[in-house]
Structure formats: structure tokens, C-alpha cells
Image 1 (tube, rainbow, N blue to C red):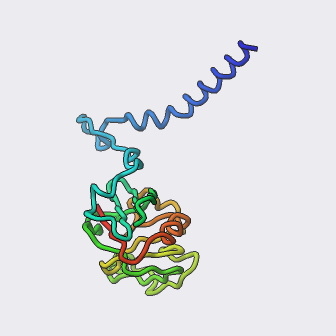
Image 2 (cartoon, rainbow, N blue to C red):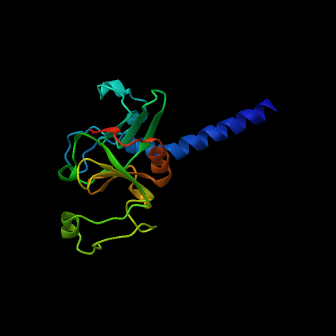
Image 3 (cartoon, rainbow, N blue to C red):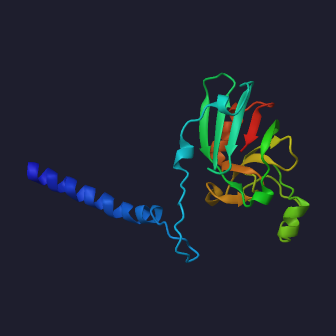
Length: 195
């Protein structure tokens, strides 16, 4: 029986190593995609999904704080009770030009948000509608939290492929189930930092 367990363990370990090999090879690829011989560092965002301290970013907790870490594509939330902490993967703006950084706050919350693309969005993509009602096709998902900056939001998305990617026109996007969780806890006046 010992020999059989050893064989089963060996088979399981070998199978796991086989499945992990493509990911390990990609992670260790240090060659430049452009064909240059100079090595480049491959950065992964695994470290961004470790707990952070609100004190490192905000002077006071207040009714709560949100840190949107654009480089690592993670959203951190600390509740005003000093106990609640949530960490969510997020989508971030497509380009640095579309990215707004700094301190702001939540000024409005909406279940079933409607969407009106900005003039710049429609200029980049003329096929966009002038207005979209709430519903499954709406890019703002099921819930939205509006910031003091016009046209910048933290919202859900029905297109789950966008999470973890540079895919928005400036907003921070979350899976619908995550934005619902966050929405239920966030109060108007919650401090937000886009970093």
C-alpha cells in the first residue's frame, strides 16, 4: 500500500508540475518582445493582493477610505469602523492620458446606473450610443459610486474580461458581485485615492 500511495503522490506532483510549466516559463521570460537582446524585468501584480494599511495613505479613517492602486489593478477598502477591510481586483484606465490620480471622495451612489458617454469617448468611438439605460448591456454594471471628479466612477461591469486589465476610459471597474459588496458598505463622503 505504501508503494501505491507513493506512486499516486508522484503522479499528482508530476501532473501539477506539468500544468504549471507554461506559467512558470512565461513568468521567467526576460527577453524583450521587440527583439532587443537587453533583458527586461517581468512584473506581476501578486504583491498588490496583500493587505495594506490605511494609515500609509490617509491622515484619518473618517467614514472609510478607498485606495485604487492603478499599477497593480487592485482596490482596497477600509470601513469607518476600523475593522472592515476588503481587497478587490479591478479594471483601470486604458492609458495614462485617461488616468486621473489623487484624492477625491464618494459623492453619490446609484443602483442601476444609466450611462452617458462623454464627448471624448464618442469621438474615440463614434459607434457609442448617446445614452444607455440601466441593464445587462450597460458598461457601468449594476452599481456605481460617483467621485467629485466629473465622469469618474467606481462601478461594476457585466464584461468580466475587463477586470485585471487596462480597459476603461478613466473609471475603476469591479466585478458586479464585488461592487455590490462594496456599495453596501461605502458611505457618502468616503475618501478615495487613485494612486
